[in-house]
Image 1: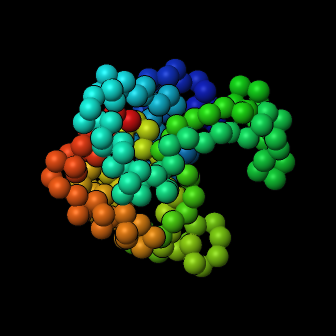
Image 2: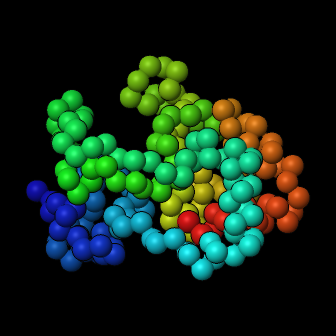
Length: 186
């Protein structure tokens, strides 16, 4: 039996930590190694976020329509709420908290799905769960398929995100850079 993930300290490299305990592979998690990361979201870059360019980028983020799916704030369920078919009750430490994931965690068709049904009816086959944007500045690749190497990947959104992607493409180069600067504060 592998050790629980709670055995890791925040910031540990799960692969090397498990290897040091004699676990050579992470197959038991059914996740590729790159999917394992620290549980802490990196703090926002508040210095960059306070700049005029980033503030303008935040306005553009909302105006373009990114915030429809990449919502800025969510309030967690009240403490004691029973979820997952009665398997989990929200603890006090997680209940009624305002978090800023910049994602609604819902399924959306953005035109880049892989055809795999997502725990539901067949119409979920090309839908993807909105990825939260928190910590975005620490990632080298973007979109669910990791094929995009820059934040210009916003333009790849289609389907339900067709209009925001069109509005992004219509921004001036300076406006695009401001929006990307804003994203780099997350």
